[in-house]
Picture 1 (tube, rainbow, N blue to C red):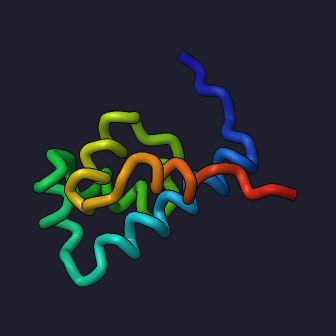
Picture 2 (cartoon, rainbow, N blue to C red):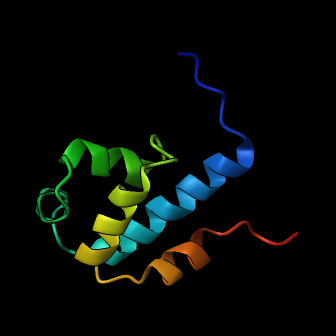
Length: 83
């Protein structure tokens, strides 16, 4: 299966998501947060660095619960920036 290349907007949204998660994680370790969310530390690392800019919905939802973020807040922070 060939994957369609991401648009610049999708990459930018992924970078915003990564920043939001890093900030919400604060001093907690990546391993601790990933384990609490039921994902691997490598998956969290990829999301936080923008190398996985389109994570699955349930991955984002699990991270939001672990980091005490509302899905509304995640959506607002990752929405396209108005021009």
